[in-house]
Amino acid sequence: MKSNIKATSKRSKIMISKDEIIHVAKLANIVITQKEQEIYSNDLSEVINYNINWLGRVNTSKIEPTAHAIGEKSVMRTDSTTPGLNDIDALKNAPDKYSNFFKAKHIFGED
Image (cartoon, rainbow, N blue to C red):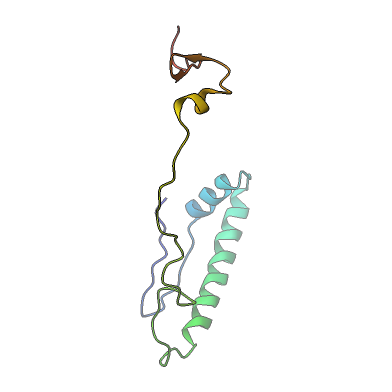
């Protein structure tokens, strides 16, 4: 579902649509009435607009833009290979095998 929430420099009012409320309710697996849809649409819009306006008052002129809050460069380890199991060891505990392969029941169609 495409949201109608857009960031603008004019700080225009954001309105959460009833369709978006219905979508979130479906995701949460809850049933809400039409009256609740209207209430939640208005209330959530008010909460979001209040917080956007509050954040808009924060002075960020001396804050350098960043893509990561704590300055981490990379948290991923280097990729390295290790030896795997050979055929005999891999099939040692297999419940059913055919030659040097695992044997399994068909999952699509018939035998």
